Length: 149
Image 1: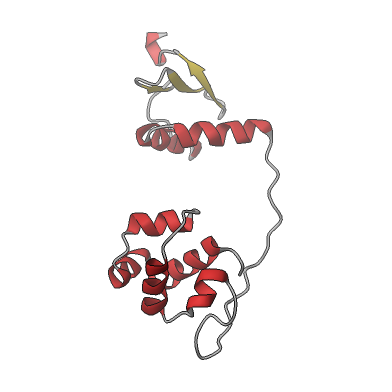
Image 2 (image 1 turned 180 degrees about the vertical axis):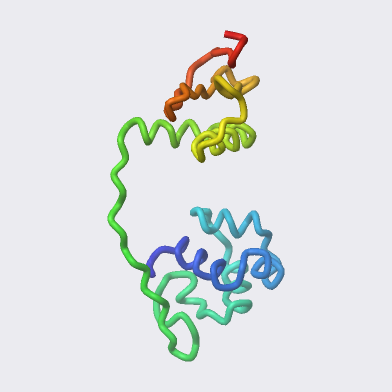
């Protein structure tokens, strides 16, 4: 396991983010940042190593056994990278930028529900998600919902 983010994720999976935070004094927000690629300090590595019983060298560099008793780290399966179309990539990028309420509404639409007939207004964002009734959705700027059209 030669990726620091994978090693942090493994520790979070095994110990739980909240429990790991409490045991190390590292905030759950900082643990999330470490899992997504932020740099850390030597002190944080020591805290994580001490709290989880993992070897400092394994945690920091991915070298040697995971534990002092010689237990090796599990191997991570390598899945082929999924191939996404340009449309799928654009949808993911738009979704990431959306606020939580819009994300929840899109999620409801994708699961087959429709919180509003004729579309969902993304108030203040200038973009609406419109359901055509045939299961397809579209993002459009300044579209009014339902009977307001």
